[in-house]
Structures are given as structure tokens and as C-alpha cells.
Image 1 (cartoon, rainbow, N blue to C red):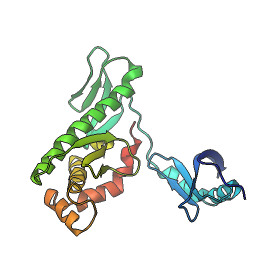
Image 2: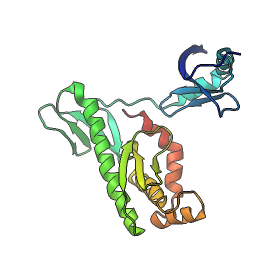
Image 3: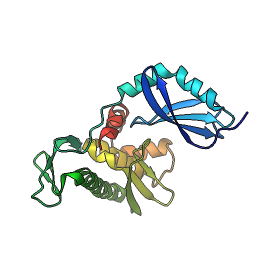
Image 4: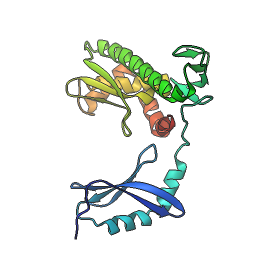
Length: 234
């Protein structure tokens, strides 16, 4: 049986919906797995010796499930004039003000200068800067409570996690956390700072998290229920 080449894109019509998906052979996969990430990217992970026909047949057998999951995804919110964003959980509307300078916060507004064509990039850059500033300040504050220093804080846009901690003590966070309520942001940062001491999720780790951020159940539940919505922006 011919082996599938490495990642390829396929497009199928499933129950009237045209769906593009990445076909990804994996040495570790024992069976075919269909995945949908928070922004609606569909990936079909298949064992190495799976044929393309087998993969397509599996995807077609899951057409109803796939259509239901895609239909349930939140509608995207582009960075555009009039769009509303929940900055630290509080609603802010984007307002284009070409006669002003830079990007600034007004009362319930994100005021953006310059040409309208550059507005999406300017808003995205602004949110990343705000996320980096907030995450760095809060991470250092939590670390001081443990008698530690934070080596580095970076901002990225991962699809499947909100934060991470490397063995070198480098912390990384999703910029989209700036759109979550402030208490959710604090929990995620406390969680990753706790990993500076315990690189696991054992009992000692969770005791550290509770020391830094008591009642961590509430923000974990918020992320489970509402975290996917944060990927709709931009």
C-alpha cells in the first residue's frame, strides 16, 4: 500500500459544506483522528500506512459530527471600526480616528489613528503590547512571592494552551488572555509561575497554585466554558 506523503491539504464536500482539512500522517498514530482547533482548522491525523482513500472515507463518515462542531464555533470578530473587544473582560469598541496619533484607550474605546487599511494590524500590535506588559508585571509580582525572578516573558498565539514554562524558566503566554477577565489572566500567570518550582501537575504544584491564587477552580472552569471564544477575535 503506498504511503501518504507528509502533510497535504484536501477539500471535501460534506453534507453540503465545503471543508478544507490538513491530512497529517503520524508515526505515533494508532488510528485515524479528526481534530478541530478553536479557529475551525480541521486536521485529519492518520497512521503512516493509511491510504488517502481510507482517510477520505473516515472524514465522510464523520460529516454530521464535523458539521455540527463547525457550526457551533463562535462567529469571527475582525479588528475593524465598530467591533467590540473585551479588554481584560471589559467591553471596548474600536474607533478609527485618523486625525490622532497611535493607538490609545478611551472610555470604553480603543482609539486607532492612521489609515483605515492599517487598523487591523495596529489593533493587533496594541493588544500584544498590552498582553506583554500585563503578563510580565503580574508574573514578576507572583514570582517575588516565591522568592524567585522571572528570566523572560514572551507572548505568542498558540491554539491549544494559554501559557507555558520552559526548563530554563522562560514563561510564555497567549496574547488572547488580554481579552479574558482579569481574574482569569491572574490565574493562568500564577499557574505558570508555580511551574518555576514544580515542573509537573502533582499535589505540591497545586498547593503552590492555591498559595498564589486561591480558588483556582473558578478561572479553570471559565476557560473550559469560554476560552474558545477568545480565538474568534482578529
